[in-house]
Image (cartoon, rainbow, N blue to C red; front, top):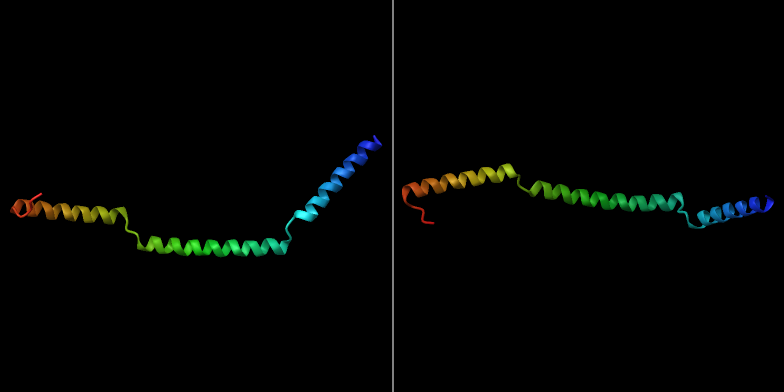
Length: 82
């Protein structure tokens, strides 16, 4: 029983040492978090720019409808040859 307890304590100690040696500090974490936030802000700005420049389906549907109307009128007048 004493040997089992000692083995368990050694396993726990080994785990604690591993965590101590490999875990990031709060400062390291916050530094990396700042980098990630900066990158996300860049992506957000790019996405905002893309959204502001793109046209909607409704806009394209309206333009296509206008074109169809113009072509119909030209065809009726005999001025459109396909």
